[in-house]
Amino acid sequence: MVYSLATLWHDRNRFLPGVLAVAFSGLLIMLQSGLLLGLFSLTSTPIDHAGADVWVGHPTAGSLELGRPISERWVNRVAMEPEVTRSEAYLQAFAVLRKPDGGSELCTVIGTRLDDDALGAVRQLTPALRERLAEPGAIVVDESELGRLGLSGVGDVAEVFGHRVRLVGVVQGLKSLAAPYLFCSLRTARLLCEGLPGHQTVYVLARCRSADEAAALAERLRADYDVAAFTSGEFSTRTRLHWLLRTKAGIAGGWTVVLGLIVGAVITSQTLYAATMASRREYAVLRALGVPRRRIAGAVLAQAFWVGGAGVLLALPAAFGMAELLGRLGVHVLLPGWILAAAAALTLAMAVCSGLISLRSLRRMEPVDLLR
Amino acid sequence: MVNDNPILQARHLTRSFGEGETAAVALRDVSLDLFAGQVTVLMGPSGSGKSTLLAVLSGLLRPNSGQVIALGEDLWQLSDVERERFRLRHCGFIFQGYNLFPALTAQQQLEIVLRWGEGMSARQARPRAAAMMSLLGLGKKRHLYPNQLSGGEKQRVAVGRALVKDPVLLFADEPTSALDWAHGEQVVELLRCAAHDRGATVLMVSHDARVVPYADQVFHLEDGCLVTSRSTDQAPLLSAS
Image (cartoon, rainbow over all chains, first blue to last red):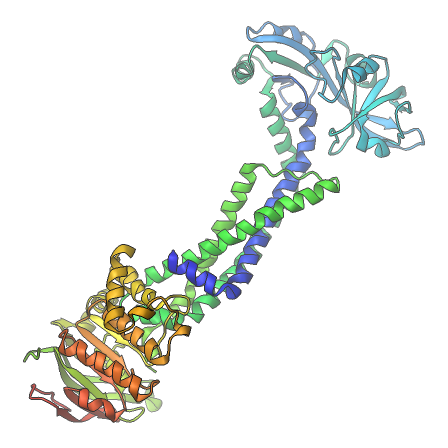
């Protein structure tokens, strides 16, 4: 390792393209993954910002927007489970909003209880907003969606399926991916969700005595009844994954990562190949002295590892910098530790594989060539 | 240190390059013996086959026919891996160029052989390499890089790299050709010491007649044939074909 590092430092200009190629690949993987995560985290914000421990819905509801009506009697049935301290209905449906200036926009109506302990109401709904939402036809939307909905501010009026709705407030951080969320009371939601029969709900939300009991409750509900039941964490992940796979964006993102890896591998392997060829006479002397080829291969792979390590070290701050910059432009990039660790591991593996490819240079290194 | 039994015996070696009418014959039925504790110089004009003979005798180039028995082993009957192990255990090489890693210090050039070749730890390799550097008169320069050393010093490091694992057989291909005689003489003296003091068998290819006084026996090669030989002491000599 010492000799490999010494060579790397001594020939740093020669190795620089390889290090930059690795850094480019690492940055691309981190940013692409972070962008996808950030994008699809929008699909689960109603779950992530609500206070429920367990979500219960129709058996086909593998993702938040796939909820279908179930009997409202499930609210009581869930409430009777021993670990449940509170359960309530949660309405959600797609609806078409007619803008004040004409035109229409597909929206997601989300109707929840509005009291202080409500499980479905997102945290951003302050007591004052909830009080205003109690008024029939009152809605709250994310501030960034106002333009999309043709609304200019609080007090504006629009129509949903012919019912008049009035904007009573705005929140932040609840932007949607596809259909803007219209937050409202259960009563307003029943009005706006035309296809929803009476005495039915879309989800039943539950709070447990302890959050630790949520997983066991969800598992038992799934086993005992024909329902979909998930902890809020599970449901959030399922929702994001569903969007990731359904929209094929994950596949597109994956291909971008693969392309980044290929570009990185080609440049890195060529850099290592050139570096090894430049030292071929020195390596040939060692081969003449009987040093096994595998030891020399090990040295080349060690160089590849250090090139990869240096590239990852460059990519990490660059990824954070780019994420910060994109954040200021309104693009949400999520860079959790596991994404960074996975991207670093993948990038390092790519660098070592590049080293393996460059080992072909060792085949062109025969000690007898030194005797000419 | 001279022993009557040859350490290395070569018999009826032939080697050519290319095929058919364009084939160039480099060695024609060459036979010779090398003895422990002796410096043997192989002389001859350019293209006479000196380096080819050194390559065949040292296990680097397979002959078309003939036999090389070194330390009781039929070198060209061994597998590639076995021959590599043989070179690792018994052979040292000095080439015309210095071929030193520019990123490593003079001492590290020796350490790398011990660590990668013999699997020594850094703790074991360092003192042994340092001792060899002192023996070469480079003790104070062992932490310098090749670009900080003169040509003569670089070649002495290359000699040290060949000697550090204490080889029985030492092969040197034109080791003085890139040096002025003052520095070349130092290198030849080191090789003579390796033979006379350490008992190594040294085979040196050279076209410089000034190395002859340091040799115990001298072979002349012309057109791939061993034409003359001379012993500078009374050691048993070769058969030249």
